[in-house]
Amino acid sequence: SISENRSFANDKSPLQIFVKAKKRINDIYDEINEYVIETFHFVNDLPHDIDIVDKAEKELFESYIFKVSAIREVLHRDHMKVAFFGRTSNGKSSVINAMLKDKILPSGIGHTTNCFCQVEGVDGEDAYLVKEGSDEKLNVVNIKQLANALCQEKLSESSLVRIFWPRERCHLLRDDVVFVDSPGVDVSANLDDWIDNHCLDADVFVLVLNAESTMTLAEKSFFHTVSKKLSKPNVFVLNNRWDAAADEMEFQDSVRTQHLERCLDFLSKELKVCSEKEAAERVFFVSAKETLNARIFESKGQPPHLGAITDGFQTRYFEFLDFERKFEECISKSAVKTKFEQHSSRGRNIGNDMHLMLENIYDRSNVMKKEKGGVKKKLTDRIQSTESNLMQITREMKQKIHNMVEEVEKKVSTALNEEI
Ligand code: GDP
Image (cartoon, rainbow, N blue to C red; front, side, top):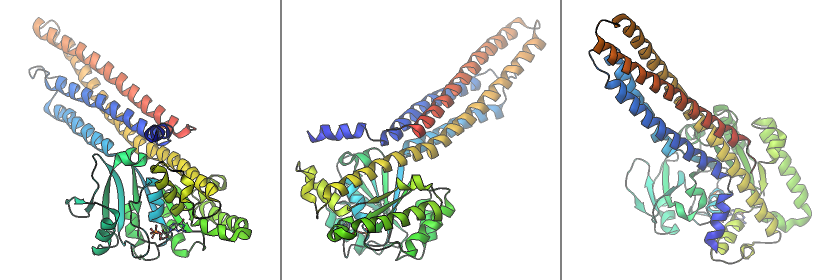
């Protein structure tokens, strides 16, 4: 059945690297959270009449509860983000729709949006959109209405419209990929603002070119700016509208070679974001319109080739699939690295800090036991029991933090080396 096919495809998706790592690190932070709370209560409940711990220290322990809960909140919201750029009408919206297997973003003449559109998954069955600066959920009944809503509004060019789409309708949304469509790089003067507002946290950039023409200065300069702000951004290049090349069979190969060389040079020599070998895995010749057509037929249980625009459909369709696979692998690994490495090092710092504090308290109780030893049997007993508790808790803390850091580091390095 279709749904079986879908879940089969999902289990093999490289996006699972991110999904699993996220689940794992969330579970670990649940444990850390319990542990931090437990430690705080233990320290907070230490008797006042024996000066083992003071008020400032108790407050510091409490502050770790807030820190950990802030990290957990960020973790729950962590996602993978891909941003699409290129001139208007090159097919950015069509590529996104093809990947989402549905006509979600309006495309075509007269539907040029001059704002950013973000598509993200949401629980439940209803799609809606939210404009920047508003909390109102505007119902999206169909694509036409969405298109009108986007066109009629006088939206400023760097504002963001968020489209919430039921995550169960597409595995990319279900697995926490967020899509950002941009106004054309040819119609905007504020590229710097754009990048600052919408791109600095993107894990992958996709440059959508029109295979019928050559890369323009506007398209190039945008990525020059991006690569100045981000060290080695992940850039994919799609030569879209490749179906048009099929009409001129005799030139197809030479056109492809020429485009390919230019794209490879651009990525490896001009932007220097990757080696030439890596760049070869980043450049594709596709037809977004055709792929979307094919997928709409597929979703109705019909064969994809019914969506063919012209000869050579199979090759273009497979190349789109190849792009998606490499894209999923890249975004998943990149997001694991940038997001979770940070969380694990923060977790390690919190663990080390708390560990150090507990050791200080432990040392103090040791000194105190010696000083007060023999003075009052009762007090000594209490210090002794506090001390053994502390010893145990310090030991546990050390072990847990150690396990956590190991676990996360292992996860990150596996994710980065995993071959799917
Ligand atoms: P955007 O402005 O970059 O978002 O471009 P759109 O996705 O809106 O596409 C502009 C027009 O080009 C639409 O009419 C699309 O149907 C058409 N288009 C997009 N991709 C392809 C393609 O691969 N082949 C062909 N023949 N037309 C395409």
